[in-house]
Image (cartoon, rainbow, N blue to C red; front, side, top):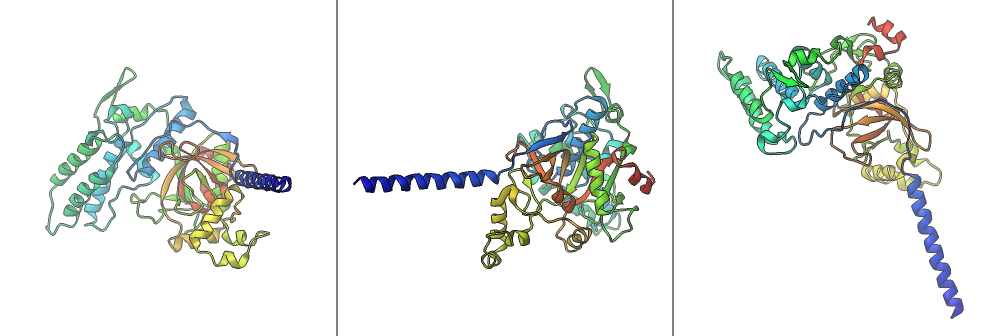
Length: 400
């Protein structure tokens, strides 16, 4: 009996040790981040059920620029930008007789254009998102279900001529769902128009440029990145991949933030707040892996295993050729806009950018994502940055 009890005790201890080892192993795969650089940003926002990441991320960028330059904390109004931008986009579709896309998306330049040409107001000067239709956050489902057919009816009209009256009808839809843009408002005891308020923010709109990196256009020249939501067609400076990466790093290390636009449909981008550029081929060759078994797994199962590795997942090193191939073959897509504002390292020494999202306090880090530098470089479509944050030797090549 004593022998049986002893064996049972040993078995229990062994089970406990195995469970502890498994727990320790799992824990070691979880990131432990050390902040290297963290630049000031404004509060986390929630775009909710609206395709307005371009708007939230870029206004967040300009809020951070104001913080850096003046120390003042502003909450700028996203719905003001939407109201102005969607009217402009509808006008383009009508001018093109329907041969242009009208959608919820946009680009960082759209926000800059609105600031320059229409101004801006603080969040409190317009109804809060969603409140015009009885919600507490954005929900553009009904809004666009109403607006898109209206715009199509004008843009695809068989009439030989159209009148400007359609704009009044569209403005009514915009105002009904987003709120009417104020012509004048008071803020901290002063009266402003949207333009005078924008001028009071202390920024020079000529300081901002967008940067990308592709080989189908010459380096050190500007071109309009060929994605549908880049409908205003501004030029982005085209840099080699290493210089595109160096600008981001130089900006963050010198107190600037970066309005990033890129691809988050890659399986390495998780909803928990981590993004790693998975290298599934390298994972298959790791010591102790069963190559035959690995090759037999589906892509979804491989990605699941990579996610289980956490910060120990091996990464690809992005190349110029990789970026171009993925862009040409529709793998590198224009999915999401976010704000890069800091740098951190994990327990393995891998470097990440700290990135502010616009999904509320989602994920393990309450609205912040840690995206590896390799992921950012590989998945960048383009980004907006203050030209003063660009290294001098690169600015000289660009002539800015």
